[in-house]
Figure 1 (cartoon, rainbow, N blue to C red):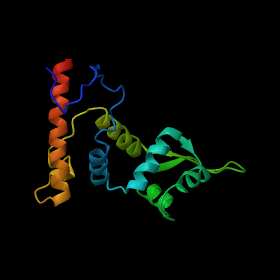
Figure 2 (figure 1 turned 30 degrees about the vertical axis):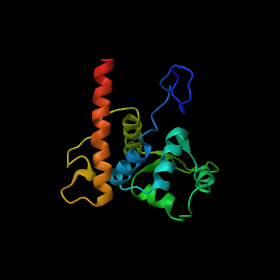
Figure 3 (figure 1 turned 180 degrees about the horizontal axis):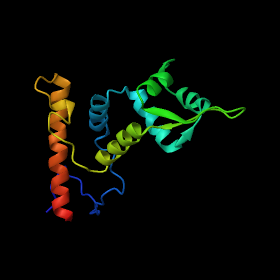
Length: 159
């Protein structure tokens, strides 16, 4: 029996996307900015530098042209130990830099969270779970709880 006004849909298979790690990028980004006290452009720069490994100041400036103007970004990242000198200038060789151990750990930690590692809900390790959160922090921490439940469920199904 055909129901009037309802169109028939072709029976299709549903497949899971191969790459789904950016689904919660906005929440992970907010968490990372709070945890590491970084601006969004600084975070983007660190993702770029993480892939570059060794870079000079002109490479830094070239990528920085894509971002909002901040004339002290390089010196701030250097001062706050997100980047470090890899090789000092000698003769006609330019100074080379790299993401510091602290910077590499932060970016690696963000990648792990994007790939489904649980995000801590403990106040001492997650600044979003302090005792007096703002409205935006409450919204994001509720989503973190949801993400963690989803991750646990997915792990239980697979494992």
